[in-house]
Image (cartoon, rainbow, N blue to C red):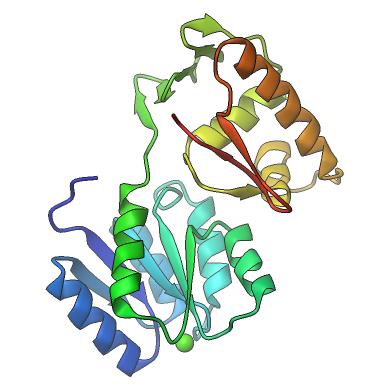
Length: 231
Ligand code: CA
């Protein structure tokens, strides 16, 4: 993404952290906005969606993980890259953060230089393009209105569930979705299904894509979930 002055929303409550981040991101040409608690952060993101969000884990009024969950559910903020900042270093927290849709995770104390590099990487993440109900990612083209999927111009025969699964993955290329997250997004929150259901449908989707020359499009992230990897 060739954004000259990308907008970053920093949701953080510690004044020293805010000062540090504000100064360094502004130095790097970012347009910086600050929200000092979770609810304010959600509102600010919805009101004027930024290009990137830095989100603290421990926040007043609404924890970072809940902020992330809410942003992912809202149409206007669903696609914004989110980097979670946290003082905790346990692996399971990282998994939880990714599970609710954070794109990356940085543990405090972090190097600002590294954080800026990660921020730039998050902004460069490929995006899906949608024009006139046509969602295109690499060689895959989906007609959202007619429910038609083409891979390398070849028409794919897939079920409605696999269609929804594919569209969910395609809308955020390279974002890793956990099985639980996919169950929630594709089958609905009330679905009391085994996460293996996801694996079964991913398997079918993969075979359909492979027969049309789309091998390796769906990446398995071991022990976690799946992501689309456009060539
Ligand atoms: Ca905090």
